[in-house]
Image (tube, rainbow, N blue to C red; front, side, top):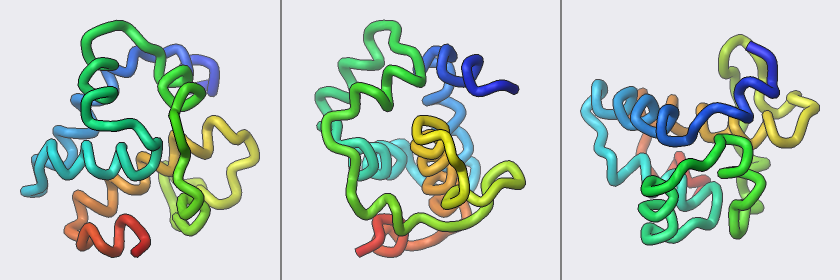
Length: 116
């Protein structure tokens, strides 16, 4: 899938997939929301507001209030690609979220996921 297709995907179609991935492994929607808030700087109210109107996945990240400076500490492989080596900044932000949800689903503690 090319980057532009990913950026144009509706956030409301991606979000349930992220939640489902975590819930299948015994984690919660609230934990997914916490990870998203940590990464993007959205408040819970803003995150819920985004779920009430159409927003592309690209715009979700482009309009993030405050991308966490510690996101650069996220390392590892998502979809066969090392997230720290992704050259396209917007795609890297998207893959950071994928990696965090992967870590959540694998049972890592929130403290480690949020790089505390």
